[in-house]
Image (cartoon, rainbow, N blue to C red):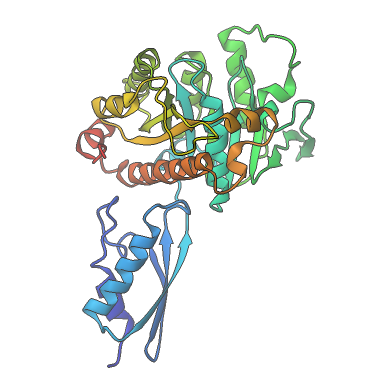
Length: 374
């Protein structure tokens, strides 16, 4: 049987992306089709290197060609990725124009492990091959210098076309900067809102970030001036809310979700992250103890019609690794690293869905119609 590219393309039109609800051909995810004798090869270009559906889509492509063209064909699929810019970037090109997606990690209250989540999420994304940056925007309590063992470090400053530019540190596969690199770590920052907002803007405008697929911003806890500055200054693609299973934390997480959905802000809520979900003792790794309550995050996610992106357990090594300046996601094959890897997949999955539908669908309408409940 003589096979041509048109037959291959028509067959692949039967493969539907379950998140974006369109076929792979119309989504521009099929490239470099090549046919030689009985061998068919092409590239499947995913919207993120962290795509959790990569193997399913690959297998669906092979099945479609064998079903609609010829079962005897040898089908070779090369997986690739091309992270797409959020549609919001076009509206605010003056600030961070080379950053494709800006993601806020926020919480309604302090003490829920937001910075730990932000750091390990950024590292997990970087391990997939994505270009990732991390900003510590927690003006009053920057912790990222300690978590990366950079407490006494000062970033380099270069002259670029007559303008001073700050070079971010590069460690564990990501670029990072913190307000903590520019202040005395032993002194409290006593800043009014406008002073803090001005200092924060410099982390965006004065840093030489280069091209990034994702920029993770660790925000201060609560809802206030800093958060408004971020959404008004930057083309924020979405926000992930961190909570613990406790009722007091869930109540504040609910407020944070409502703030980002409020009129005049309208930032897509990518989902909820439940930290400290259960305790796993090192000597009993198969046991789970729900010391802060059970299923609080999943119940709130269902109530607010937003996905539960992940449940991060409590293990002693999380604290120890952060204090030692080497976050736990740097290591491989431990239960927490796998939890953060799964979190990175689900978060970027939701981001791709939002980016695909943002231009065609009103934010509120999308939240009503998307399959947010798992």
